[in-house]
Image (tube, rainbow, N blue to C red):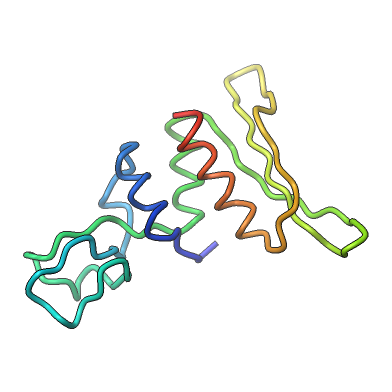
Length: 128
Protein backbone atom coordinates (compact mmCIF):
# COMPACT_ATOMS: atom_id res chain seq x y z
CA UNK A 1 0.00 0.00 0.00
CA UNK A 2 1.56 3.25 -1.11
CA UNK A 3 -1.08 5.38 0.64
CA UNK A 4 0.33 7.54 3.42
CA UNK A 5 -1.14 7.50 6.90
CA UNK A 6 -2.79 10.81 7.74
CA UNK A 7 -1.22 13.56 9.83
CA UNK A 8 -3.04 12.68 13.08
CA UNK A 9 -2.10 9.01 12.79
CA UNK A 10 1.53 9.95 12.07
CA UNK A 11 1.62 11.96 15.31
CA UNK A 12 0.27 8.97 17.27
CA UNK A 13 2.84 6.71 15.62
CA UNK A 14 5.68 8.97 16.70
CA UNK A 15 4.34 8.95 20.28
CA UNK A 16 4.33 5.13 20.20
CA UNK A 17 7.92 4.97 18.97
CA UNK A 18 7.58 4.62 15.20
CA UNK A 19 11.10 5.08 13.76
CA UNK A 20 11.28 8.48 12.12
CA UNK A 21 13.91 7.39 9.59
CA UNK A 22 11.64 4.69 8.05
CA UNK A 23 9.94 7.16 5.75
CA UNK A 24 11.04 9.04 2.65
CA UNK A 25 8.46 11.74 3.37
CA UNK A 26 7.63 13.91 6.38
CA UNK A 27 4.64 15.83 7.67
CA UNK A 28 5.26 19.43 8.68
CA UNK A 29 4.55 19.90 12.40
CA UNK A 30 5.70 23.48 13.01
CA UNK A 31 6.56 26.16 10.52
CA UNK A 32 7.27 29.73 11.62
CA UNK A 33 9.50 30.94 8.81
CA UNK A 34 8.58 29.31 5.52
CA UNK A 35 5.32 30.12 3.76
CA UNK A 36 5.94 27.39 1.16
CA UNK A 37 5.39 24.54 3.64
CA UNK A 38 1.92 23.94 5.05
CA UNK A 39 1.48 22.43 8.54
CA UNK A 40 -0.01 18.95 8.25
CA UNK A 41 1.06 18.50 4.62
CA UNK A 42 3.65 15.91 3.64
CA UNK A 43 6.70 16.52 1.50
CA UNK A 44 9.67 14.59 0.27
CA UNK A 45 12.19 14.64 3.10
CA UNK A 46 15.00 16.05 0.99
CA UNK A 47 12.92 19.17 0.14
CA UNK A 48 12.30 20.24 3.76
CA UNK A 49 14.80 22.68 5.31
CA UNK A 50 16.52 21.50 8.51
CA UNK A 51 14.93 24.20 10.72
CA UNK A 52 11.33 23.04 10.07
CA UNK A 53 10.01 20.52 12.60
CA UNK A 54 8.68 17.34 10.98
CA UNK A 55 7.44 13.82 11.73
CA UNK A 56 7.58 10.75 9.51
CA UNK A 57 4.86 10.30 6.89
CA UNK A 58 4.99 6.52 6.45
CA UNK A 59 2.89 4.46 4.10
CA UNK A 60 0.26 2.05 5.40
CA UNK A 61 2.44 -0.93 4.46
CA UNK A 62 5.45 0.48 6.35
CA UNK A 63 3.31 0.82 9.49
CA UNK A 64 1.83 -2.67 9.10
CA UNK A 65 5.34 -4.14 8.83
CA UNK A 66 6.49 -2.22 11.92
CA UNK A 67 3.51 -3.48 13.95
CA UNK A 68 4.23 -7.09 12.88
CA UNK A 69 7.98 -6.89 13.52
CA UNK A 70 7.91 -5.00 16.82
CA UNK A 71 4.62 -5.98 18.48
CA UNK A 72 3.66 -9.26 16.73
CA UNK A 73 0.37 -7.70 15.62
CA UNK A 74 -1.01 -8.37 12.16
CA UNK A 75 -3.76 -6.22 10.67
CA UNK A 76 -5.55 -7.54 7.62
CA UNK A 77 -8.46 -6.31 5.56
CA UNK A 78 -11.11 -8.54 4.08
CA UNK A 79 -13.96 -7.90 1.69
CA UNK A 80 -17.47 -9.09 2.44
CA UNK A 81 -20.79 -8.80 0.65
CA UNK A 82 -23.79 -7.10 2.20
CA UNK A 83 -27.05 -5.58 0.98
CA UNK A 84 -25.24 -2.32 0.14
CA UNK A 85 -22.64 -4.11 -1.99
CA UNK A 86 -19.00 -4.86 -1.27
CA UNK A 87 -17.70 -3.61 2.07
CA UNK A 88 -14.42 -4.07 3.96
CA UNK A 89 -13.47 -5.10 7.47
CA UNK A 90 -10.25 -5.18 9.46
CA UNK A 91 -9.04 -7.97 11.67
CA UNK A 92 -6.22 -7.67 14.21
CA UNK A 93 -4.33 -10.80 15.19
CA UNK A 94 -1.69 -11.25 17.85
CA UNK A 95 0.81 -14.03 17.27
CA UNK A 96 3.83 -15.72 18.74
CA UNK A 97 5.66 -18.91 17.79
CA UNK A 98 2.72 -21.23 18.41
CA UNK A 99 -0.46 -19.22 18.93
CA UNK A 100 -2.40 -16.82 16.75
CA UNK A 101 -5.58 -15.26 18.04
CA UNK A 102 -7.95 -12.52 16.94
CA UNK A 103 -7.92 -9.48 19.20
CA UNK A 104 -10.41 -7.24 17.40
CA UNK A 105 -12.31 -6.75 14.18
CA UNK A 106 -14.70 -4.20 12.77
CA UNK A 107 -16.84 -4.10 9.65
CA UNK A 108 -18.47 -1.38 7.58
CA UNK A 109 -15.69 0.30 5.61
CA UNK A 110 -16.21 1.36 2.00
CA UNK A 111 -12.52 1.15 1.01
CA UNK A 112 -9.86 -1.30 2.08
CA UNK A 113 -7.50 1.56 3.00
CA UNK A 114 -10.12 2.92 5.42
CA UNK A 115 -10.30 -0.48 7.11
CA UNK A 116 -6.52 -0.70 7.50
CA UNK A 117 -6.21 2.86 8.82
CA UNK A 118 -8.98 2.19 11.34
CA UNK A 119 -7.20 -1.00 12.41
CA UNK A 120 -3.92 0.87 12.87
CA UNK A 121 -5.67 3.54 14.91
CA UNK A 122 -7.32 0.87 17.09
CA UNK A 123 -3.93 -0.72 17.80
CA UNK A 124 -2.33 2.63 18.67
CA UNK A 125 -5.21 3.66 20.93
CA UNK A 126 -5.84 0.34 22.67
CA UNK A 127 -3.02 -2.19 22.32
CA UNK A 128 0.38 -0.48 22.50
